[in-house]
Image 1 (tube, one colour):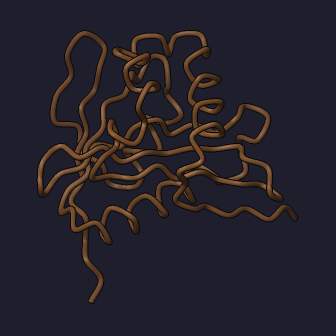
Image 2: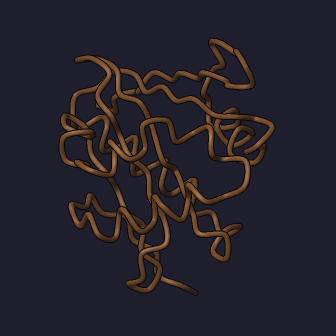
Length: 151
C-alpha cells in the first residue's frame, strides 16, 4: 500500500508545476481566470489561506488551496490529483486536510466553484461530503459548506 501524506506547503516550484498540469486538462480552461497573476505571486494570492500538497511515497501528486474571501469564509481552489493517481481516495483525504486547515485558520465556512459538466466526479464528491449548491450560472456551480468545529 502506498503512503499518502498531506502538508501545508510553500514550495512554490512544486505548487506551480502541479497547478500548471491541472490547467492543461481539457475543459478546465475556464477555471483559470487570472492564472498568470496567481502564479506570479502565490504567497500574496493565497494570503490568509494556505496551499496543501499531497505526496504519494514522497512524490508530489496532489494539491488543494484555500483563498481568503472574508474573515469567516475561505474559497477552496485547485483540488487536483494527477490523473494516474486517481481512484485511490486521495481527493477525500485532500478535502479532509483542507477542512482541518480551514478550521485551524478560524474560518466558519468554505465555498467553491466547479463546472459539473467538466468535473462530474469532483462535483459528485462535493455533494456526497455535504456541500450545498447555492448558485448555478453559465455552467458554473457555486457550493458552500459550514465548517463544523469539533469540541
